[in-house]
Length: 350
Ligand code: UD1
Ligand code: UDP
Image (cartoon, rainbow, N blue to C red; front, side, top):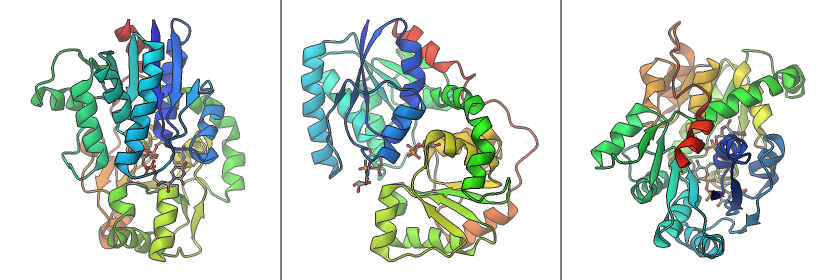
């Protein structure tokens, strides 16, 4: 088969690394990078570190308003699909690159497979929620990470070609874990961190970065935490912090975004993780590190139900209270599959 894979943003390079590794021995993959993320620390570092083959095409779309960005992806992807006429168009997650890939393919009557189908926050003010809903309704194979996702689709009338496969991010984590382990002590030393004696923070959701009151609430909390905080800053957050004139106290280390291996090491050794990232919530769970989520809702409800993730939003008192009192239970049931999910996705395309 010929598969055109559409990626464009950081978490998609990570997810595609697993599926691409399972796909390429058996099929021809044409990898299309929309160019949504373009800084080396947001894109190239993942191709290099995760051994993801270089893109066959980079559309170089770059940043922009939602309509302009998605529109230029749509035009670029359409041209490639017309030339390639693949058996499947493979899209991941919930970004504008996902939406453009699914829409361009379905208008050309090409079958779409969606990895990470069925997730819902039930909050339509999130751009990701709109992207997910549309991508799912246009997809011909819906590859779900959880039973919750399958149930969400059923409630929207989608039950055909829906498969509970698990989460490909666990495949990547398992692949990278052994490789990252020997570098662990050197990475912690370079960053001046001691095992379990710091908090890791990531923030990038538009709901947090684009509302100055939310961002300042989060920064107030980080500034009041009585232990070192490592904060690899997404470019969207860096701009928002500068625009709002928000400063970090010296114990809050604002650094460039990390590569996957470094991120895995610092996540694994943190006492606690504060995040609004979808991927980081799951990684915290798999690594057995308590997570405090800086959002009002999550798509990864199982991590909350298991007692390892707590939703606090952006209120500084609530954040600090959770940082002080977080106490996950001893048990941590397996969630989101068995780490062999990419191969299952390829089987289902076949
Ligand atoms: C996007 C996804 C989000 C995902 C996140 C992963 C959408 C609508 N959002 O959010 O779902 O969780 O990626 O990280 O698709 N920028 C740079 N360099 C880059 C990329 C971006 O400086 O390499 C800056 C630009 O100022 C840009 C801003 O970051 O305007 C936001 O980038 P964009 O791709 O629009 O959305 P993300 O916030 O990254
Ligand atoms: N990540 C990374 N370096 C960082 C921050 C995050 O490698 O500095 C990884 C993280 O471990 C996870 C993925 O990026 O695998 C999550 O991406 P992001 O938070 O950008 O998007 P989301 O998952 O929220 O869509």
